[in-house]
Image (tube, rainbow, N blue to C red; front, side, top):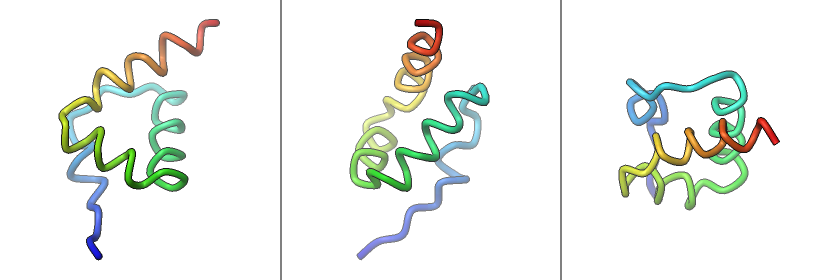
Length: 56
């Protein structure tokens, strides 16, 4: 078992209210996917995609 320190991982990411909510939901609902995104350094790209999708 391991523990995720989301605050450290998310430090420095540029988020909006929408993308922060989506990121929080991902961490709660799909923690393994959240960890994969963070460990693969794909977090900012994922966040940007969430914000782009909110327009539609």
